[in-house]
Picture 1 (cartoon, rainbow, N blue to C red):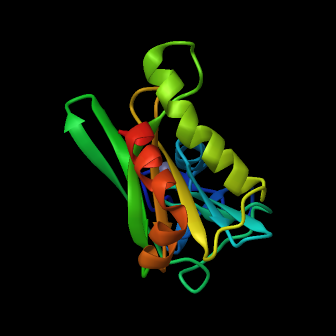
Picture 2 (cartoon, rainbow, N blue to C red):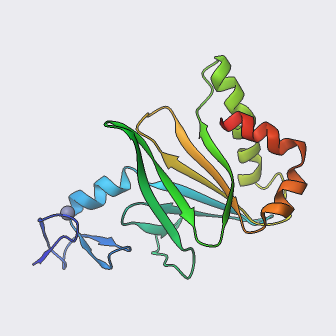
Length: 178
Ligand SMILES: [Zn+2]
């Protein structure tokens, strides 16, 4: 028996157990489930294909559930607390620059959520390869303490190139996320 790297629970390493990619150590099932329930999602759009990654405190996997390490994507993630019970996760990628940051929500028919659909539709088009950006774009979807709102950031390795390509759309997306 071994101890979970996140709590004091014992882990049956020969049975069903979790793995922390960030600690390189075993996780108990409770800690694994807890991490899985608040994962951030990273979509990397490369023009005509998209890679999807899931990132938690401990979990770093691709769409197939395979562990990824810093050589694939060097991701950092932290909880930003805005008050005692409120906050959001913030996920960043080494050598990628953030060009947009804010939050979005689903369509509820009110003015605020209507405004959010500008970003949602653009992101949907990027993720489904209906729009081809001139350089890779990362769309990061982070959970927040509000179930109905989602933290968003858009990152790229070539911010100037992407901003020129986005042109007027850049301002609209920025307003949509604010
Ligand atoms: Zn644990």
